[in-house]
Length: 335
Image (cartoon, rainbow, N blue to C red):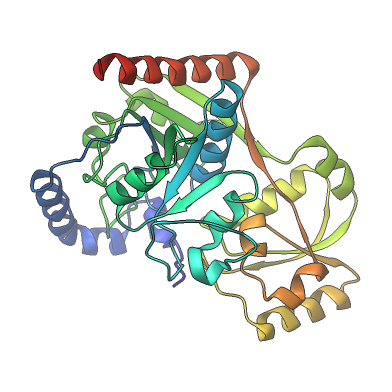
């Protein structure tokens, strides 16, 4: 299944006004789901990284960076994810030698290159599965701020700095999974992917720490791509962000192709893209996430630009400190 973010979510217009009454149905469903579910407590810390909006905000790179921070302080994290787009219900640990994106989803497969990743549609079952592995001592939950089945010890909301909360309306009239004020009551940390361009910072409660990261490739990737003639394609939550990254690192972009999020690339897709790139005297380039969904025989012919979220040294230290505090709090509550 692939999804495209409606353009009308970015502002107030006749479409959002027309759909506004349906938002009350969404709000009621969300309320009942929260009220009628008792969250289960895991015996290892649960750090949840999620969105208050639907669509791409840069959540997955934040998950990867948090795992790196946790490893740096001697912890052994596992990512816990639903495995969107995969057929496996889990709980299973992702093995890139055995699994394809059709099995476990593109993001879990990508994250498994450098992290332990557990796919489980049932979050409490997945957390228990992870904690049964004695060498793993914490969970970084990819998405799930609105999932009431599992108790979280640290809750992090990620926003795209350029998009913010769009028109601020609930689904389907807008991109909000829940009302901003309700969602922020349930959040310990806010992370902006890119500078806040919408003034959302002013609406965030003063006691919530706010950090801003920059999504970009590492220096060696930037050097490799500088001046390179490329034809880019992307099927992610926010394709323009990928093309902006290519532009920022100095790639010579001769063409762009946009696909829906999680688009399953076919041989026909790739043949057409390859022909267009070839005619323009360029190479095909895509995101790491998209590369995971390419037919195996095409992967050697497509460049990727891996990105990660970079924080300032001061912010990195503060985030690590908050992670350490979370562990101390969980430990003290278990005594």
